[in-house]
Length: 337
Image 1 (tube, rainbow, N blue to C red):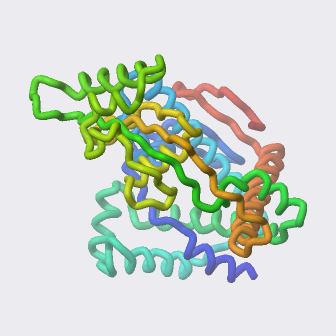
Image 2: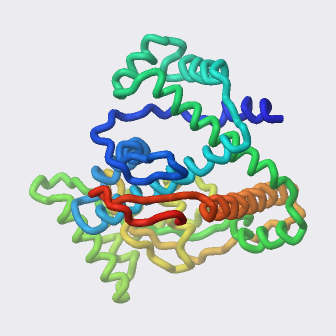
Image 3: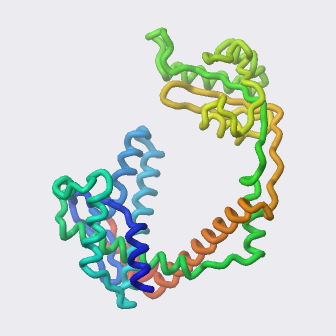
């Protein structure tokens, strides 16, 4: 059974590379195992770069970065708790299993079997083959333990099925329909003196006029810059599965209540306002529907396994030694989370 779980974990494991450590200040110690600031950076690096590029300097960016770091540290602490349990139960991953795992990574994209290319990437990442294999060993060990926990929950009671269906029944409707209207304001019009910020102000002013009772269709005729502007932005009665409207705009449209207007939406090219009129929700599919029943069973299992995992983590934290440190190395929490 244990070896079977080892094999399953090979499929589940990821192909993360360690990033070069800029410094190694201690941030936590879990059951005697240290977690460093550089490990937190390894986990958060990619998402941190996205936040830095997508959000301007200010409170929102700082709050997102703070939350990202906290979640990463919490995840690393949980990893060490799980590894402690793996060791307690006598879990061992033999070197040949790690070698097979690494070879699978080399055989897959982007290396396509080129070991030299793989080794060059390991070196570029500022790590060594030994450290990389140690990281893979940890990943596989954690996946084994998570897999054991998940497999311990395999049966959903009829009561749980019904509860899950009641919470999620809106996800299992037949097609809904609505008359969709749009206002599109291009970010870069032909006039070079007009900036995207000018266009943002314009679309916000249009949104404010609609809130104050002005007619959406008349404003579309005056300001909109899409193919249905002359028709007052009217795109006709569309279904949720219609291909006549871009997927993201369609999703926004069908999230609205009947006759409700969206907040200002934007992409790389334009700002948008959407209105859904005469919305008619599709009928809810019954739990006896084969596809619905299968999906609900999967959702219920996921919820049960998540709850079981949370209980497991709570239990591990109660008996663990967990110490956290601030940026100056001072102890801020001790023993339990």
